[in-house]
Image (cartoon, rainbow, N blue to C red; front, side):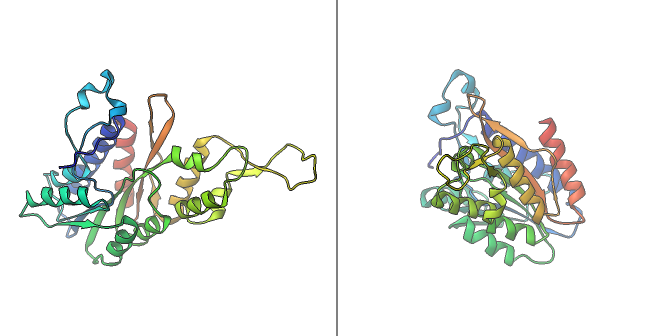
Length: 282
């Protein structure tokens, strides 16, 4: 087992939010004629422990090996998932997932060694009429492509938890000027087009002394970036939870935003109520 080291107390909070939602989701649908599927797009290895950067007295309670998202989904009991898909690009971590899956020989588990941005659209295209799924998009950084998000939303059969890397994206968007062309390309991939993130920029109030083109600058703080991404989610999903959870580092700077989006028109009101309650109260 690789035993990935990263995160800290905020990671435990994120996973507990997921656990509570999966338990409520499967219970709500246990008497419906659907095949329930859980898809973990960045599944890791099934377990985790806090990284060295968090080995302080504050996180003493989290120094043991803890359950990751894949193990949490496997252990949902009231109505277990009918199928579980674990996607992991790193071969060593993927091996750990296969070993974990072997401990549940009676379950329909599909560990996939591959790129989530290739495997997620493939999964979405293969869904049956009676499939319903929860997809967990939990990247380490900016790996999630908007094409993957759009594919999930287009099925109208998937509830999606999305961890948005706010700090990493903010670093790509300088306050005093527009990003370089290379960074702009990354932002295009994350937001699904240049128009969507360029809304965060406006013409600088400073007057050029040399007749140059007016300089562009980012008009607001990082919260605006999270708001723009939420607007993008609302443009493709049936509904997005009003509440998002902000995870901060030890200096109280926001690192990630956890969003919830529902794709199915009939199921969305209940799903949004459950997710929003968890986001507000846990």
